[in-house]
Image (cartoon, rainbow, N blue to C red; front, side, top):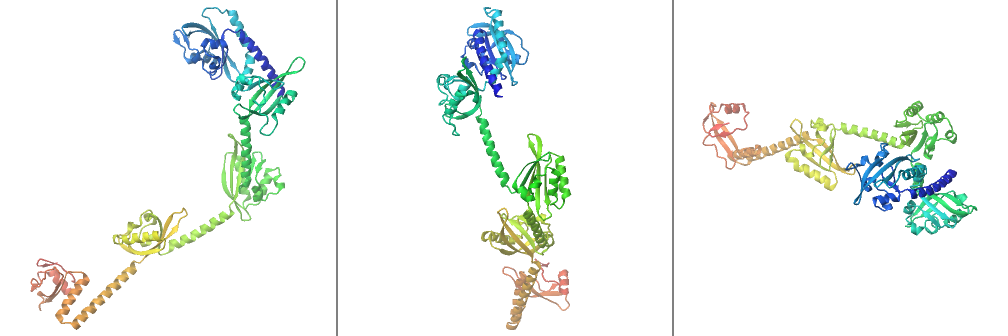
Amino acid sequence: MIAELVNWVDQLQTTLSQMEAALEVITDAVVFLNEDQQIQWSNKAFSSLVNRPQDNVFGSNLIDLLPLIQAGQSVVRESYPDVMTRHGEYETTAYEFQQGDRSLLLQISGHSVTTPQGASSTVLVIQNITQQKQDITERQRAEAALLSSEAQYRDLVQTANCIILRWDHQGTILFLNEYGQRFLGFDAQEIVGCNVVGTIVPQTETSGRDLQRLMVDICQHPENYLLNENENIRKNGQRVWIVWANKPIFDKQGNLVEILSIGTDTTDRREVQAALENSLSLLWAIFESIQDGILAIDYSGNIVSYNQNFLEMWSIPPEVLAEPSRDKRLQYLANQLKNPDEFIQRVRELYAIPEASTCDLLEFKDGRVFERYSCPQRLGTEVVGRVWSFRDITDRKRAEDALQQSELKFRTIVENVNDIIFMLNSEGVYTYVSPNISQILGYTATEIEGKHLTALIHPDDLQICYSDWQKTLALGKQSGAEMRVRHKNGSWRWLSCHTSIVNSLSGGVVLLGVSRDITERKQTEAALERRAQVDSLLSSISRQFIDQDVDTAINFTLKAIAQFIGVERSCIFEYSDDQSQFSLIYEWCADGIQALSSRAQGTATTIVPWFHKQMLSKQVRLFGIYGDKFY
């Protein structure tokens, strides 16, 4: 490699000399365009033709500098000589070109050149044939000189992004090409004649190496440094790394005259390499620190990598790890499992389908449970191996089993108790209702879940419901209340509700409640209370008949009965002996109610047959009067 590089440097120096001599005799404009149709190089004749400094020509498009006219029309970009030449469709053609107030006739020939790297470039020769002062011989000689140097020029293209440096045996810079000037930040005037040390080479490398001594040693023993990499410095102080290919040049006496150095910037490569090494170090530390056991194998059965946890989890001795047979290694692992044949079969299936991934559980004979995950290892789009990950989830699996048993037990209890168990969120919406709600209220759990707690509450009990709910939220303590709840059939059931606050797994507030049907108890309590009221009423009436005269006692009795049953009038009627008439003999009326005494005397039973029938059967209790009629 070094010999080829040295030979290439010799050829490059020869080519440069030949190109300089050839271009000195060419009076035609010559321009070199890269594959992006941008001018990469031109001679002075072209700069003069377009009236631009040579430095302002490079990087421009031909159409911007040389607007051509043909048959009175501007030539479009697709028909420009460089584009047509690149497509292999161009022949030497004459064009018009307006140079200031002069109209020139230009004859342009083009050649397509392919560099060793495969890049396509174009060389154009532009001849001013306006006054026919250039003869064909001179043009042919120029084209021949250009064509003869095409091979050497292709070599020159290779150095377009390289630093070309010439320096003598004392370290003095003799030449630095334009790329080198741009890269290092120096102009030719300020760098030529200066020593490499202190300008483009720092005295000491970041690593501590003495670069001044290195430069001296290169000049004394150039044969030892045909290829060298060292740290350099730009004008702005930035440190960069450059690989130098050095070609020593000697005079006839064998004395070192100068060194031709071709430099390539390797800063990015070194930074990437350092970053990669750091990344690999970090990944390896992570690889060893994770709790999972990791194993990587290529598709030839060779172990590529593993971590210590893998060896410990599977109790793998060194001799098994060193076993070359994949089947034997696999059998050692399988023998620890409850289902070894299933384990081996699954592994073989995965290796038969390189793109497949899997995640399953492995049960060991000793009771342990591993979670196994496997995925293909890809290099680009190609699958080159497989990575296995094993995680010991024995404790988690046991906890899950215990949790499932506990959940089953408590669910059985909840679903079989006589009470309704429910959960509300902080907004008062049911998030869970036990299934036995259907036995108490006729609804299914899904019909209630998602509804607000007040949806089924009796209107008269809403305030009680709200107060109880707010009390639980505010105090965070258990509270209870009794309220009426609508049954699915439309009736009302009395429920005793007790709620308390619990914290959910998500950190929110949940109200846990228990409701018990107390309808029968409420009915019994109401009946007992009614019976007690009746007993109290009868007792009061009895005392009246003992302590008062008959009329007073009767009037008290009528008033007490009317108020007890909630009516405005209470009367006693007396039938005639033949039961053909009846008369009102005692009456009590509430305030504002007109008495019937004058209108209910000697009333014929035929006027109110229904009332008469009910009275005889002793079934009538309440009646109304509208005008002179009973109803």
